[in-house]
Amino acid sequence: MNVKNIKSNNTEKLHHKRNDGIPFDANLFKEININRSAVERRAATLGGRRSVKKQWQAAWLLKALSCIDLTTLAGDDTKSNVQRLCAKAKSPVRQDLLKAMEMEDANISVGAVCVYHNLIVDAVDALGDNKIPIAAVSTGFPAGNIPLEEKLKQIELSVAAGATEIDIVVSRNLVIQSDWKGLYDEVSACRKACGEAHMKTILATGEIPTYTKVAKASWVSMMAGSDFIKTSTGKENVNATIPVSLVMIRTIREYHELTGYKVGFKPAGGISKAKQAINWLVLIKEELGNEWLSPELFRFGASSLLGDIERQLEHFVTGRYSAAFRHPMA
Image (cartoon, rainbow, N blue to C red; front, side):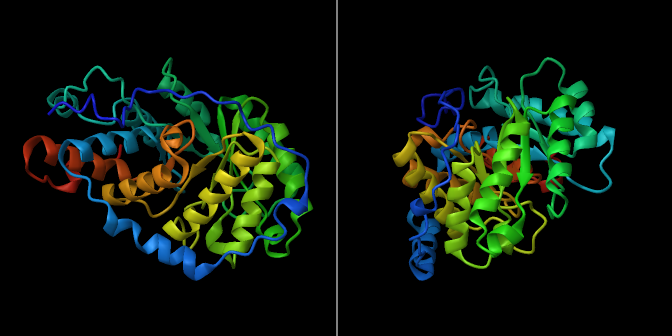
């Protein structure tokens, strides 16, 4: 049952220079024109070309688990919800399963916990001395339709409360109207307000009409200093999809080739099954390489994915599937 020596090592830590951004230059992206049919054809092949089984599947699932931003963004969230979320974040897999896989000493935890601003303090208290990052959604999440001054104040308050990562949401009207300089200025101001906290920029791609605009918005967000670009808030009618992820991932690759900066990627919304998680990991490996298979450069925004991963790991250990309710997210 030992999965320690499989290449998808969950204890590996990567370090890279933070993306400082570059001056705005529309010439870098103005000629982009995404071929929708080609993107969707490439994406459609992903699920059928790779079959990961047995201990290799278990290793990939442990990798996926380490990249989860364990999230609760419900209107009825309370302090007790956050306490349970953080307890699960610190110990995401039952110890008997880890022992059976000889991974009990691997110190496996999720990538971060993600909460609303008013619950940051509760997350700080619940995590204590644990180093799991605390991410807060900010800037008028999920619609983003508030003045920039209020967005910046929200960021500053979240950082002051203890958030080490800030998930901002862009003003979609700037993208739809192709106001790329306006978008650059907004994201740059948010990055400055974040200070040392890492910034994930949410494009809300389900509300962006074309892949070409998604690609250009990705470029502008990275130019403005985003540490991650993120597909969705999880509140749109359409959230993370493989095709839109492919578009964004390739802009990350091109930006890295131009600048040397490594920008992270975060699909969010609708990712609830272990098989989906493996598909995204395979996409990252094929398009960006092993360096991006780390919570420093790849995250899932998810609330129920962890439960299904733990269920699949129990099947690996015992050969039997248990009821989903035996593996609650938190």
